[in-house]
Image (cartoon, rainbow, N blue to C red; front, side):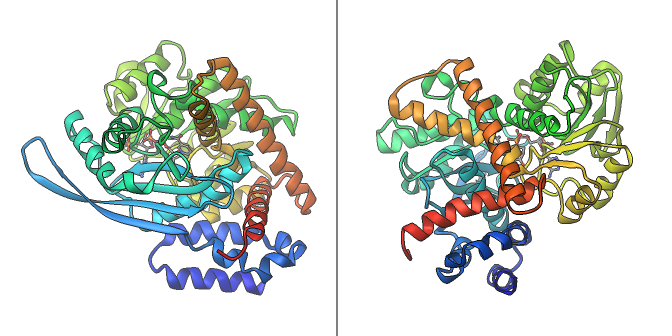
Length: 445
Ligand code: NDP
């Protein structure tokens, strides 16, 4: 549709150099044409033009002092993208690659993902180009405190509720929440991913990885397949990857790879039992490198390698954006992969996605497949406002129900719009229509 092409051209022109943001916008605009035809009122109200422009973008200085007394200056970001259906909600990423284009792509994706969960949350994202790797605990704490010294004035339990993402886990959330509480003298649910001892929800650390596996099982059900007995490639070895590994093991699948930014381990016997405990300790406690797993268990390790060339049935990319390129997708297809569940945000390039679609591979798009994390964040917000703590089983059951609903919504939407089983189309349209209707109802603001 001409009008959508024009919007895309404008986005590229007005946001020069922000390639990841352009990519995320293009993917959504490519899907929503049938919904625009069905709802001409969206075009009249310039809903798409408004949607691609963040409501607010905050960029700030974060000075901090290292253990030798040297001062460093990083850049902090918070993009409050859309609050039509609820307070801004989305994680904070600390990684040297972070710049405004990455935060905008993540914030934009978050709008539709959050809409799919059925919980009232708008879309936002934040972060910094600070590199946590190799920093001492004190340095991390000082950085988090200085980051919050500016961010606190822009967030709040009914305004904007951040969480973790790459480089931000329970430790960093603790330091940021602590500083917020000190600055405002208020204990309130301004962050999710907190420790259960002080307001966090059980299952929040596990939620993205578990949810990814639940959604993957839902996809497999539609072709009468089961995770049980399947071989799985997982990339990354952080929060999402490790909890996807744990749930795959519980459901009887065999995970044969994990990776980090240095390389990939391949363990044909499966990473389970004592080996699973080892890798959790290695990554979450000792903060070591994945090659140490290969040294410990004498298995194959390749430097500078991604998992996609190894033989398996299912791929769960859980590291970072654009980690599956066209040739990686082709390798997976050549190895007869049947399903891809996107744990990371936008892990497949547009060309890789085309390869999957051409070969009828089941694809669980990130907006649906990794929505378990933000869903349990929504449940954490609910527990905080009621001053309640729900049991592990209670939250896990809610998570499973939410992932089943997300799959059903995406599947039924894809069918309604004439491309049954194209979950990317289903996720984009279902998320978009919900937010667009809310924007329409609330007038031109
Ligand atoms: P973590 O920081 O816990 O782990 C990230 C993992 O990915 C690490 O193993 C890291 O390796 C690897 N990685 C990061 N960047 C790169 C890169 N450029 N190239 C190769 N490997 C890389 O992050 P999470 O597990 O939380 O996040 C992983 C993905 O899941 C991200 O895309 C995130 O946006 C997405 N996500 C996370 C959610 C959550 O709840 N945490 C929710 C929804 C989505 P190394 O240590 O060497 O850098």
